[in-house]
Structures are given as structure tokens and as C-alpha cells.
Amino acid sequence: MKTYTISEVSKIFDLPASTLRYYEEEGILTNVGRSANHQRIYYDMHINRLRSICCFKRTGMSIAQLKDFFSFEADEEHSIDDMLALLEEQKVTVEQKLKELHADYAHVQKKVRFYTDVKKAIENGLPKPDWSDYK
Amino acid sequence: MKTYTISEVSKIFDLPASTLRYYEEEGILTNVGRSANHQRIYYDMHINRLRSICCFKRTGMSIAQLKDFFSFEADEEHSIDDMLALLEEQKVTVEQKLKELHADYAHVQKKVRFYTDVKKAIENGLPKPDWSDYK
DNA sequence: TTAACACTTCAAGTGTGCTTGAACGCAATC
DNA sequence: GATTGCGTTCAAGCACACTTGAAGTGTTAA
Image (cartoon, rainbow over all chains, first blue to last red):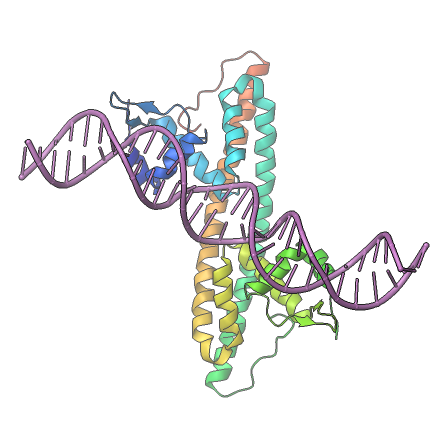
């Protein structure tokens, strides 16, 4: 059974060791083992858990929500409906975020185009584009 | 020339008035007018600026970065290259975020599917799917 | 055997992005 | 003329997600 030290996990996820300790303290990284001399031992389940944590964090979940989710997960039989509700909700959230982000991407591209035109105008001593509505 | 009170702007963007005052204080919402009795007067330029602020914030820009961007914008002639660089950088950031978010969406969907199967298994008294790698 | 290194706990501190509270101003309505 | 409503300033406070510091333990290499 493969094990990992805190610095190994730290490297894999590019997270400081302090953050891993913090996640454990907050109860979102559970059942971390200890060696004879109290050093943390991580297993593949923790690697998987951290993958989920990072994913959910990127989609905007807070530590508190993560805690809820994983405590549901620990009591699967009893909380399966709660989990699915939470997951469906998160799915909708991500869908919204994707929509927004696509729109925001268009906005940034529009700005790039506008200021590229402004640059050209400045370089050629031409009148600057009037795009006052947009700017 | 259309003008807006703080509560009107607040409603349009669903941002508390305190946030609008804060943005002004931080120098990302500039040249806000005042009435005879010191009340804030916003113009269309502020509505446009706020649209940009909200967009950039969603794409992960900090208040400090926004400040940089808009101070470049105020000195267009001189800072056009800095602005374009900042915008291109932001464009790349958004592209990365879009990629990540798509992957995260897939991850959430996978979880939904997995726990839907778990639910079925529980309901029918079947063995639970072993998807230990993924969980 | 002593120095370096990797790790531990626990409490306190930090940065970001607002939010809240207190005390006040001005204009309109009862 | 008092109350209500909408606004003001300024300073302090808060929530979240970590981060840092101090003091200590245990293994490893010179």
C-alpha cells in the first residue's frame, strides 16, 4: 500500500504543508495516518480526496461546504440524497460559471481588439476610435 | 446626460452601496460626481466601468490589478502597451480558467453519475459500485 | 556529538474584500 | 417641528483561507 509524506503530497498538489495541515484541522482531509513518531502518513485515498478538494475549490466551494460534502460521503447510506442534491446544485453552479466565463472571455477579447485599434490610431496619428459606449 | 444615484447603481449591479463607496475609495471607480449636498452622482461611464469591474473580478482579477488597469486606461496614449500586455495576460488566464472549469465540470458530472449508481444499489440492496480509484 | 533536516503542535498573525456602526446633513411629508 | 428616508464620512470590525512563529521531537550524515 503506497504511502506519502506531507512533503510528497505538498509537491504533488503544489500546496504548502501548512495548507494540508489546515485542511486536516478543518475536517476536509480526514483519517490521515501517523507514523510511530507522529508524522503524517497519507494514502491514495488522500490523493483522490485532494483532487476532489482542488476541483471543488476551483468551482467556488467554500471549506464549510466541502466539509459538509465529505461528511455526507462518510455516511453514504444515510446521506446519499443530500449528497446528490449537493452535487446537482454544484453542477448547476458550474454551468452558470461556465456561461459567465465565456461571456467574460468575449468581453476581454473585445477590449483587446479595441485597444489594438487605439494603438494603431496612436501610431499613425489617426483619430482614436470612439467606442465610448463600450469602454 | 443620464445620471444615477448610489441606490440606483446599487440595484443595477446588485452590489451594496458600501461596495460602491469602497470601489471609489480604492480608486477603481473614478471621477464620481457630487451633487450640491455631497451626494454621489454616477454617469454612464460608471455603469460601463462597473460592467468591466464585475467581468474582471469574475475572471479572478484583484482590486490591485483592476486599479493598475484603470490607471493605465486613464493615461491611454502613454500606457497603451502596458494595457495590451495586461489584457493579453488576462485573456490567457481566462483561457486557462475555462479549460480547468470544463475539466471540473466533467469531474462533478462523474461524481453525480457515481452516486446515482450508489443510490440505485442501496435501493435495490445490490452491492455498491466499487470505484475506489475515483472516489 | 553535533549539526542539519524533516517533521510536530499550538497560538497568533496576515491579506483581501468588503461591512458595520456612529454621528451627522438635507429634503420632503405628517 | 418632528419624523422618515436617503445620503454622507471615518474608523473599526469581520469572514475566510490560510500562514507564520516558537518551541520541541526524532532520524540521518559528517
